[in-house]
Image (cartoon, rainbow, N blue to C red; front, side):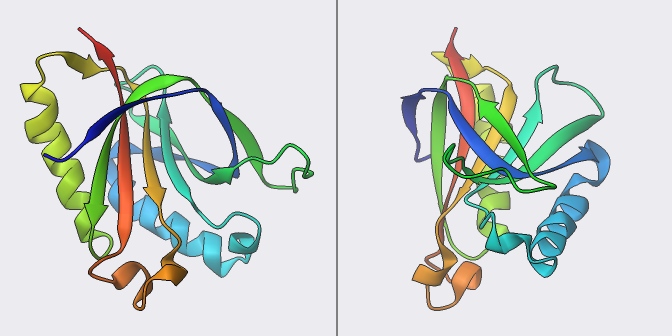
Length: 158
């Protein structure tokens, strides 16, 4: 699989947050994105990131954020939250193609093939980040065959 290992310092995001159950996550998170844009909140947070937060890992529920990088010079609008993503070493996997299939395919390979075969690293846990490129840069938006996204998985040396 194509990936790179990158150390990133902690960074803050501004977003909308909701708790989800893992058993219904695929359907419910997609609906959350639809609701976000239908409500007009996409004018405040465009959705550069989709962030799964589960520090204890193994829970039935997790927090999910639709977020952008936080600018501390801007007031936090009502209904939005600021979260700090801790410093991690991330395995970053590029994804190309129409959503959601391109991300689902890479995500499946990460957890079924890549992580089990790791020699030098292991899953550090707590966070998984989807990074979305600006869909306006593509003729078909997120349905474009060249649309670019990334999956960020926190890892640590064994």
